[in-house]
Length: 156
Image (cartoon, rainbow, N blue to C red; front, top):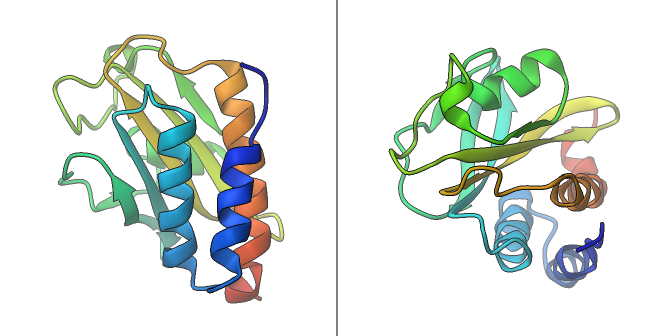
């Protein structure tokens, strides 16, 4: 696989013809990401609100982590460090928040509007090393395209 986010970006464009509501577009993104990266056992969006990540649309088993403080877990660390995270084995991360005993790898890609973090895509998988740098590239392109569609809702 190469860095090809076409399926996700096409799904987002199709959804954007009927809505610009961020959670509706996020749900479309989640569904398209799940199809594009089938190794993911959980795909979701977290929105950054008042210093914590708040769970938005997701596909996968229910999670108790509906609010995550910045700096906590892989999701919160990504925001605190202002960088995407690709973790081959979550068992090696000291402050990992276990969503499921079976999760072994995770990738978090920040969503930025006007250079400001507004949320993130979070993906879990049950296999060690399930996500590649190509997958990270696909998600980065998807996050950038998604940000362009929701930017009006985050005007400063």
